[in-house]
Length: 251
Ligand code: SF4
Image 1 (cartoon, rainbow, N blue to C red):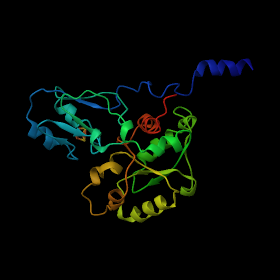
Image 2: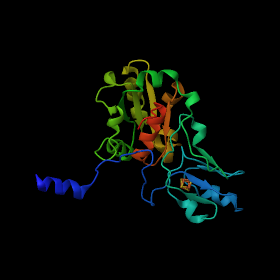
Image 3: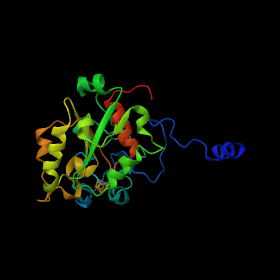
Image 4: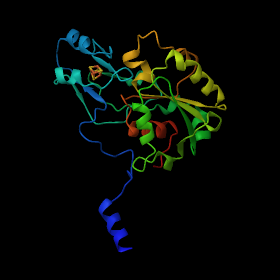
């Protein structure tokens, strides 16, 4: 008995008590800040491997960014990455960070579908579909349910069957081979249902965006409820995004 208490005392709390204020290590690249420093914008735009940077004014699209950090390394006076992991939004445009913009990225409560909070505010069951993913975002989603992040304490769980789900979480760029499976999985989820895209590949195709091996028609047919950027997305980005979507104020 005494030994057990000793172990508990040494280990401390295994879980993160407050997922909205938790700190992450400094090496994590979260929301970027773009200053108004004058630079050669053509060089900056040209160095991004996924065309996530645009100029005049300089903007970074977090739906395309792989968070490689190259822009911040080459232009440290212009771009820096904070450790802010709250990157999710229900509006695609909010993932585009502009020069001089330091405001946090939010899920806009005015544009969340009304039935989401009403029906899923207490419990949200999700079916994950890896649509040509590289297992990195899938791994992080798995982590969101481990003892540290413990997303199920908020009533959010992953389920094995789409018949038992309230929505789907898509990772990967949606390859031609997986396009039909994504559609069939979505169709198997009872109405009403939500769609969440996790990771750069799912949001924009990422480094595969121009590949003929992709078929992203699914996204032009259906409304996406939440975009969760990251490459891969951090569990706290996913958890905070979902909690905001569900308008959970009590954490
Ligand atoms: S960190 Fe993002 S915006 Fe910067 S170069 Fe890499 S992919 Fe492009």
